[in-house]
Image 1 (tube, rainbow, N blue to C red):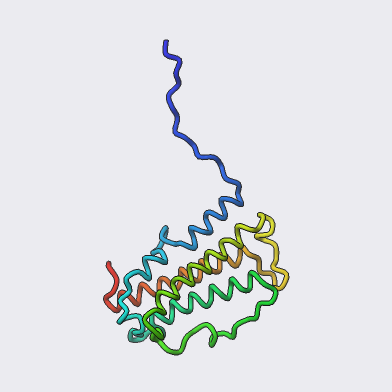
Image 2: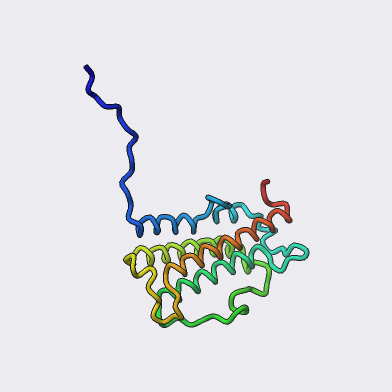
Length: 174
């Protein structure tokens, strides 16, 4: 008589709620599950179209990309330091010139967005679970978890705008 039991599917070890939350936040930042990822939205954007403002829209792709960078950096700086100095809305968040200042600005902006996101993720990883929801002492009730959701929501919104611009300019695959 064969007493061997069939091999069951290997079940990965359970993660703590805090560990799973961190994993899901990073997936949220990366995008691509319910929408286009950041990398997909900015990849192969024709340089000649980066500064074009489509008819009836207020911004170019360059202005939106730079706005994502500025806003994310602002959230990071607020989350990191009580020496944070608030930017003036909307002037400090939106460029007036629709065109990138040089040939390297687009790639430099993308690199900075990724570096700042990694710094924010490191900040999240450095907090214990309770402190993710603990109010930031120099804020008005904000906590790191709320700031993480703000980064993800803000980026998702503007990635949608980038895709619309790319479609209007004929620079997006259907």
